[in-house]
Image (cartoon, rainbow, N blue to C red; front, side):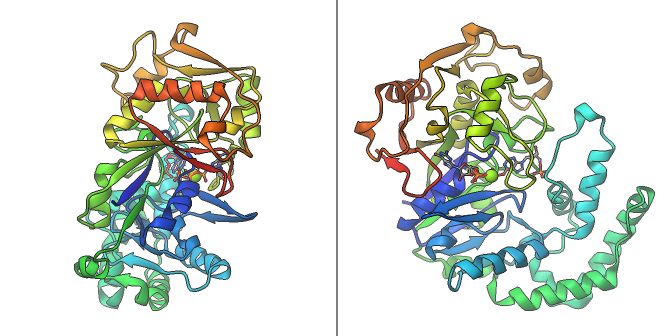
Length: 417
Ligand code: GDP
Ligand code: IMO
Ligand code: MG
């Protein structure tokens, strides 16, 4: 059966590591949304791979495909491809012809969008031009990969883009769109990638009978519609976007992935956030620094209320819990089980004002004791009882089995039940 690995929190749950692990049993690994705002780290026998666009299946030599729901920055893609080609022989990476491109002015607009907001309203984006690129897609202005075959089409599209955006760019002292240079760069890029492009009409034939693993980017709580709006990313991260974003008309089982605690990069509500030494300790031990922007990730206890919501909106079949090892030595570990004594009903997770207004009480938490060192363990049966209790509590709350447990960043620090 095809599978999807989907983040259930605010991203960085360890999707890259688990996709790499699982991809052994699949032929094709597919990204269906997002762009190089994603940062996926995989460590195999001491070698670290940092991927933003290319699915983690590339490390095992699997066929990788970026579907039409992805937004692609040509410069970034070329660099990432070159980097991975230094480590992996002949990486098999293909791009949907329908992909919308991120151009330089999208990054300028990303900056301007943030600039005009008051401090407390800033999103804290990755500055990669993601929001403006999706805005252009929805606004029917995108330059698509299939456009790159025709110089006159690129020029024509850029002309209207320039007419629309130059006044804004100019008023913020940003450089205006240079059509000549952009056309030159895009034609040059097309020359490099034309053999990697799969026309959408050929996807069915090209990937026939392949066993597919879908790699989510970001997380459910950053979903444009389901997440804490406006502190979200600009794509639908949830599993229901898979068929649209990949154009692969297939069924799949969904593996929902979460950390044993919670992190968030950027701004927006975070009900179980820790502002004390414990939060700093988790950040340090878990090396919670953003892969893309190097910002410190905010840390807090595991939040089962939002996790239950994420499982529901993703129709999760099984769970994967990562980074339990980070909590090893804490004398007391907490799990958020309610907001203001309410479990789940009637909470609109898209309403950031409401989420910001919450202040959790001790009674909103369940308490657990430390479980000690676990990094070397390789079988579920050998896990300490305190960790088993933690796992059982979560499974019981969510009513979904935790089938994969990750106890360290290395590929082999993974337990399957
Ligand atoms: P992604 O965006 O969901 O792929 O996650 P990131 O790669 O951005 O962040 C997860 C980080 O945690 C990476 O540095 C991983 O190497 C690391 N990691 C993944 N699983 C584990 C784990 O079980 N324990 C520890 N200590 N680190 C992990
Ligand atoms: P992975 O795939 C964590 C966050 C940004 C910001 C918000 C909007 O590694 O889990 P954007 O640049 O997308 O417009 O920023 O979304 N964000 C992520 N946070 N992990 C990610 O990806 C993220 N991608 C975007 O920090 O708050
Ligand atoms: Mg990440």
